[in-house]
Length: 152
Image 1 (tube, rainbow, N blue to C red):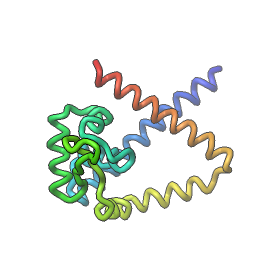
Image 2: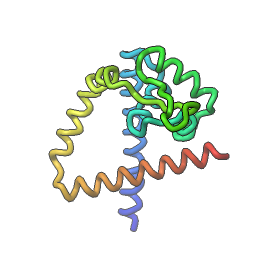
Image 3: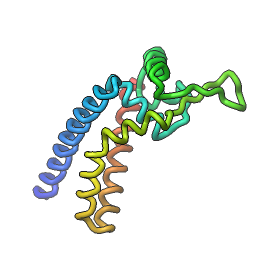
Image 4: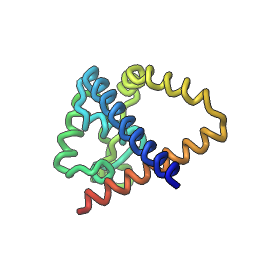
């Protein structure tokens, strides 16, 4: 029981350390392409889940719609995103990432991606499945916590 608690504590500590390191990496990447941290976060959400409406992105990012408007204006002005009219409702807008610009980001993250490939190579497929499950569930828990804090 004590060993299990110690391991759980170590996992949470390590996840915090990873979160900090990724945050610092993202800050460096953002500095190379002149993006604020929050702009980079929103661009990543658009790339992962888009096309998205501005309100859906605002909810997912936990940001006020007025704040989101400024972020989207900056991203569009600098060629990172496009705002397209929804074909079924010409009043609605969908935001999508522009692939030409996102290639710049892939290049900047290539060192980390390469390191992750090397790390994953040291695990069996069964171990990778457990790690993928754990990380997916941890990400879902983070999303739930973010949504709950945003609603209060």
